[in-house]
Every structure is written in C-alpha cells, then in structure tokens.
Image (cartoon, rainbow, N blue to C red; front, side):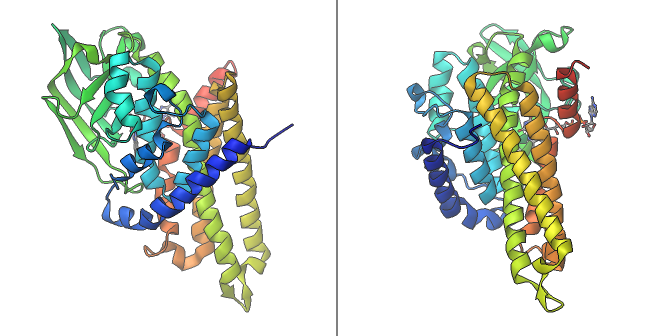
Length: 378
Ligand SMILES: Cc1cc2nc3c(=O)[nH]c(=O)nc-3n(C[C@H](O)[C@H](O)[C@H](O)COP(=O)(O)OP(=O)(O)OC[C@H]3O[C@@H](n4cnc5c(N)ncnc54)[C@H](O)[C@@H]3O)c2cc1C
C-alpha cells in the first residue's frame, strides 16, 4: 500500500508551509491578543492561488483536490488556527457551496472574486434554536415579486461581520421540515441585514458574529441551487468541510506537540531535561501516536473524496478523531509546559483555548458519532 503524497502534493506542502511560516505565524499571537483578523491576507492568498485550490481554472482556481486542500488546512492551522478559521469558512463552506450549486452569474459575481480574495464569504447555518438540529431553523425567506424578504437571526457565524456576502440557510417551505430549506446569498449591504461580533474563548483572531435579518430584501436570483434543496446541499458541503476540519485539527495538534517536544528537550528539572523522565516520554509518545492516527484518517478521507469513492463515514471519523486528538494534545501540552503553559505570553495557552471549537463546529463530536452510527445501519 502506498501512503505517500505525490511530488506535486509535496511541492505544494512546501510552498504553503513557507507561506504560512512567513506570513501567518509571525502575526498569530498579536492577532489573537488584539482580536483582529488580518484582512489583507485574503487578497495575498488569492494572488498566490491558495484560495482557489479546489475550484475550476475557469474561475481562477487550480482544482488540485481535497488532499491538497487538507495539506493547506494543516499547514495554515499549524501557523495560526484562529487565522485559518476565517479562510476555512470562506473557501470550504461559502465558496464551495457557490461552486457546487451556483449559476454562472452567481459564480462570476461571488466565486471568481472570492477565489481572488477580493470578496469574503461566510456560511450562515446555525441559529439560536438550531445548531445540531436544523429542524429547529426559523429564519424565514418569503418570495415577494422579484425578491426574497428574509426575517430571523443566525448565531456563531464565522466572518459574519467582515464578510462581503453570506450563504444563508433559510426556511422557504414551512411545514416541510428539512425539505423546506433553501440556501440564499445575502450581500452585506442588503437592507435589513446587520451583524454584531461576539466575544469568544478561543480562535480570537477570527470574527464570530450574530446576524439579524429584518425584512431583509434580496433579489430572487440570489437563491443558490434549487428551492427547498438547501438541506441536502448544505450536508454535501459540510461532508467535504469535515475533512478539512480534520486537517485543521491535525495542524493545531502538531503545533502544540512540536512545541512540547522542544520544551521537553530544553527544560531542566532534577538535574536533567524533563524529556528524560519516562512520565514525560510516555505523554509525548501518546501524543505522536494519536496525531499519526489522525493524519492517516484525515488523508484517507481526502484521498477517497478525490477518487470519487463514498467518504461520509470516513469524513466523520476523521473529524471526530482528529478534533478529539487536538483537544487531548493541547491539554497535555499545557501540562508538559508546567506553569509556563498557563501564561498568556506563551503560545500553548492559545492552542488550549482554540482547540475546543473543532469539537463543536461542523457538527459536534456527538453528531459525528451519530453520523457514524447511522452509516453502520443503527
Ligand atoms: C467559534 C465558532 C464558530 C462557528 N462558526 C460557524 C459558522 O461559520 N457557521 C455556522 O453555521 N455555524 C457556526 N458555528 C456554530 C456551530 O456549528 C454550532 O455551535 C454547533 O453545530 C453546535 O450547535 P449548538 O451550539 O446549537 O449546540 P446544541 O445543538 O444545542 O448542542 C448542545 C449539546 O447537545 C449535544 N447534542 C445535540 N443533539 C444531540 C444528539 N442528537 N445526540 C447527542 N448529543 C446531542 C451537542 O453535541 C452538544 O454537546 C460556530 C461555532 C463556534 C463555537
């Protein structure tokens, strides 16, 4: 069996790693402390082709596949999970849905400038009463002549207050349950739309927002995909997104691990580096083993997607295992660092604050287990 990356993928990893170490890692701590997103990163990444990795050359992309997408996620998250969160939602949720279900006009208006990093997207699915359970969704879109009128609210939306456009899941046929949902593109300057940033425990470089739609007017041709197919289209988008979320977690876990390994070699206690103590060695051995298992699950799911093989189960398994691994590794990393791990001037506390969101977003760990159980026929 061949578990290797091809030459093109290795070259891509080197390029994105160099970019991440040069452009992202040096600003990671400052962006977290100031709770500031580095917006110029979008056009910079667009110019270098990174935002178009998964999209057709027709719209400025390189169609390099999900394995390459996972490589990019792992390397950018390694440099800064908080900064990568904004890129992730833009590329793998908002633009991804546009590429899959958009009309030509929509792709020209949103996908092309999105790939160039000139317009930023958000994915607005979660609501105050509908996170894990979309059946509770209330945001309602009513057709009124040549437009939709949208009323309702969304919560916890990444890029929500900085995005130029949002892909919003709405109820278009009440009483039809999940068969009555539709995706609609909402421009930031649409009348009746407003966004308010919410403070968060971690991922503080990213913006997380609450959205409000009050008689929000959107042209009828902003419907994305067929009316009432929003739920299945959202699930298709999220299945792919979960593989990227797994790679996201892997990058965060590796970053916490690498710092811990280095620290264990440098920090002296009882006359020797703490890495000489078997107790610390076993912690690091377990971290490395779990990360390697997460890596194999993640790239296997991405590889299956690129081969056109079914990968719903694999994507949930990868996301579940990699995100729980990231949490475990980040927690152990704090312990290995001792008191230094608890200090704001070190990076370790940041990984510890950032990691939990990967077990929550894109379907919580419970929801991933539900999906796997469903795929097992239970
Ligand atoms: C920082 C951050 C950024 C986010 N970004 C976005 C974004 O860009 N776009 C977006 O749409 N959403 C986003 N989310 C929202 C995220 O997707 C939801 O928080 C998540 O799906 C969980 O929904 P909830 O918060 O409503 O929790 P709930 O669904 O209320 O869940 C509460 C608890 O109950 C458990 N639970 C619920 N149902 C079941 C069940 N059937 N079986 C077992 N356990 C269950 C959950 O696992 C969880 O432990 C973001 C969240 C965070 C924290």
